[in-house]
Amino acid sequence: MKRLVWALLALWLVTAGASIGATPVGDVLAADLPGEARATLALIKAGGPFAYAKDGSVFGNREKLLPPRERGYYREYTVKTPGARDRGARRIVAGAGDLGVERSSGEYYYSDDHYNSFRRIRE
Image 1 (cartoon, rainbow, N blue to C red):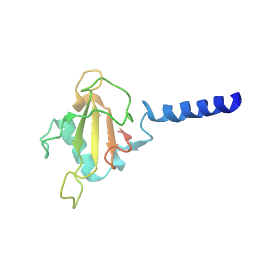
Image 2 (image 1 turned 90 degrees about the vertical axis):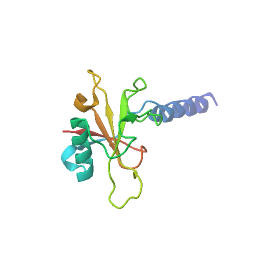
Image 3 (image 1 turned 60 degrees about the vertical axis):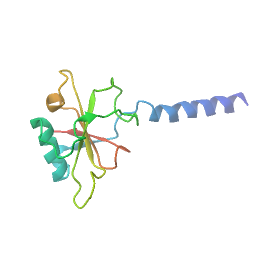
């Protein structure tokens, strides 16, 4: 019985660890992103202008899929979705980096499913 309890506890810890403070799954090359995402990335690096008022707002990382950082470290930006009447589900989340500036940090994550998953953008 003790073995079963320990095995269940170990399984629970492994499963919980996968969702608490997990890192993004996989990478994506910037060249392989949709054109709209590449355009958004270029706007982030240029400091705008952005099409949506919420662009540049704090991303809270409530899903805990990105590396844990203090509140305000991550900012979110909309990636236009052709044919969508609203902001759609695609986003780029930018980290502030060592200098505290998203536009030059080199830390960018792409989500095409409204924060259910992320891929780190590699340039």
